[in-house]
Image (cartoon, rainbow, N blue to C red; front, side, top):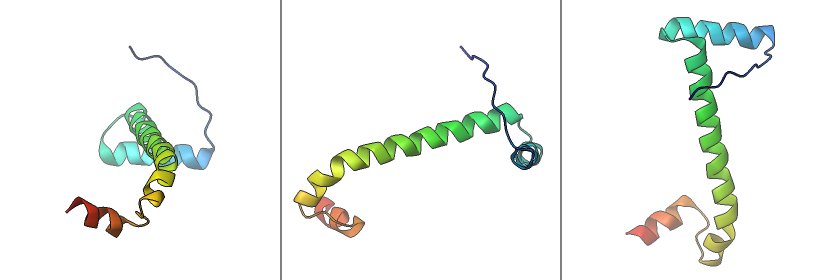
Length: 72
């Protein structure tokens, strides 16, 4: 079920949003919805990373290459 919300945007951001909507041929609400989904995904990833980072560091996994090497 979709519930409406109200968001106040500065004029410049609103103009960019409308421009993207036109170029992509999708409603502004779809652009906003997808943007929020992506923001939430990134936020959740960062939270998980922050929680797991101490465990990874304790195992000597400091950079992506360390993780790749361990997965082989």
